[in-house]
Every structure is written in structure tokens, then in C-alpha cells.
Length: 406
Image (tube, rainbow, N blue to C red; front, top):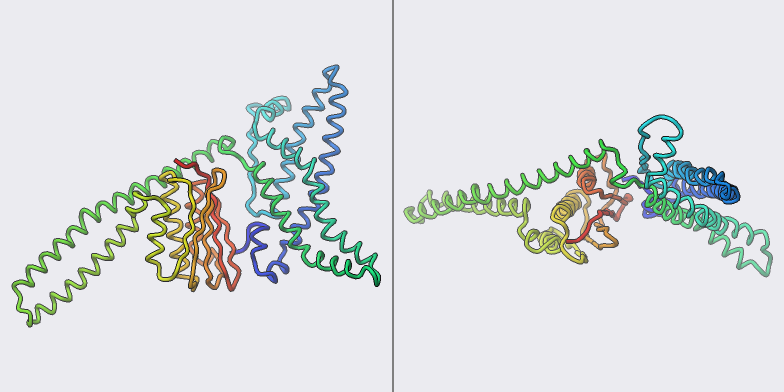
């Protein structure tokens, strides 16, 4: 799968990363960040100075309001620039005013939480981010140039150091660009209460659909357990009674043995299917125990390291179990791996899963690798899926899901 973020790109093999467009995209992101940040400093400084100077006669309110509203422009530019290091674009969370005209527009913007969040981001950007961009670029390119220019027979070790800095500059730039992009997304991504009514309804319908699937799965599990499984047990008893009346050396006894063997296989497969539809260990003991139980039956070793402070909400717990189940099934079928691992942690209301394997890599969702189904399942939970799978492996599925423990 092609990387979607700068950090994903860095997880590729060095040659693949260095020959990709990501170092250049990171350079463009940081360079434009310096320009945008410097312009923001100029606008903010001018607006604050003029506004505070005129505030005594109440004329200064307009420049101060202008400073607040100018952050909307900065945020719009940042959302556009963010596509350089994060291909998942951010929608504009601002809503349309109830009536046309400049005054209703200003009133609407000043009442929106996102405007003040954009103001905070602009302040952070003007105060620190743009000069950090400048510092990273100066270290990556300015320092090597300085060491090359001033090098002589006494200071040649500094020239060697400058050459090393220049060689690793693609990683230096991209790592900071990825961190800066993640920070910008945390400020500028729309919150649930800022989504439009239609988007909220779409999200609610997804949740209802997921709940209906969960209910239907439980119904099928009960029907199989109380219906088909009991009939197989009854059939086994009937075959046993027939064996009592059948000579041991007859042809019919051979057929009965074969029928009992096939019945036993069908019974085991049905029990496995029922357990997969609604695993009792998941309901009784939680996600960690259910994943460990599933991994114990896997055809190759799987390391499970899930450290959670308690039981997850039922919907998230169920979906995380089946997501891990589907991901591991894909690994067994397509990766050629000999080992896999599932790492899970909980940080600040965010469940983070890393599913890795040592297979041949080259995962591409366009070839039916099963990632589309995993991504769709996560969307209903407001989660995110990131994949790193260079040709030759290893592969990493990084999952983030917001949740609160019960």
C-alpha cells in the first residue's frame, strides 16, 4: 500500500523512501511553513499593535476582531498545505451563516469553536512552528554548507560531520514535517459537533448498521447452536444406535464409521464457526483473552502484547476483535509470514493497535487484500488505519480508535 503520511513513508526501505517524492514534499511543507508563519507574525503584530493603541477609543475592536478572523485564512492555507505530508484531506468545518452579508458572516464565525481553535493554532504557528521549520532547514542544509565553505586541513572533521548531516537531511525534514502535520491535524480536524447534519446522519446510520450486524450475528449464532448443532448431536446418537444393531464385519459398519467420521468433522467445523461468530471468551473475559485464544489456534506463532486498563465498550471490543481476526486471516492467506505480532496500548482516550508480520509485504488494497473492509469497519468508530508494507516486508497495520473504558 502506498504511504499516506510522511511518517508512513519513512517506514519504507531506505532506497524506496529516498527516491520517492516524500522528502521533496516535506521540504515544500517546511519552506512554505516559514513563509506562512512569517506572514502570520506580521499580520498579528500589526493588528495587535493597532488594535491595542486604538482600543481606548473603542475603534481598536475592529482590528482585534480582524486578527481573530485572519486565523481562518491561516487555517485554510494550512489545510491545503497539509496535503503535502498527509494525503487524507481535512474538510472545512465552518458552517454557512443563516443569512447573507458580511455582518452575519462575522457573527457566525465568532460563535464557532473552530474559529478559536484556529486562532490557537495560528498563535502556536506564529510563536514557534515557523521558526522551528527554519531551524530544521538551517540544520539540514545551512550547517553542511557552512562546514564545507570553512573547511581546511585543520577543520576537515567538521566537513565530514556536515556531509553526514546532509545525507540524513531527508529523514530529518520528513520526521519534523510528519510531527508538524500531526499537530496541525489535531488542531484543525473537525469535531463531531462541527459536522454538518447530513454527515452526522451518515455517521449515525453507520453505527446503526454496525449494531444491526452485531445483533444479526448473535441471532445466527444462537440459531446454529440451538438448531443445527443439536440436530448433529441427535444424528450422531442415531448413528450410534444403528451401530449397535449392525454386525462389526459388515459393509454397513464401514459406511457407518465413515458417516460418523464426517459427522464429527462437520460438528467441529460448526463449533468453530459458532465460536467465530460470537466467541464466548470475548463476552466473558474481554478482548485480550479472546485475541490470545484466537492466536493459540493460528497456524504459525503470534505474539500478543495487549495492555489495556479494563474492559472496552461492547461495540468497540467486538469490532476490535473482528478487525484483528480479519487482519490475521489476511496475513495467513496472503503474506507468506512465519510470525506475526499484535501490540495494543491505551493512551489518552485512544486505543492504538500495531499488527505486524514478517511476510513478503507489498500489500495493495486495490488487489483485494482485505484492507478496505478493515478501513470501513474503523470509519464507523471514527478510527484511522495506516499501513506500511514495502515489497519484501515487513508489514505494519497501525490502528487508532478513540474510546473510553467502562
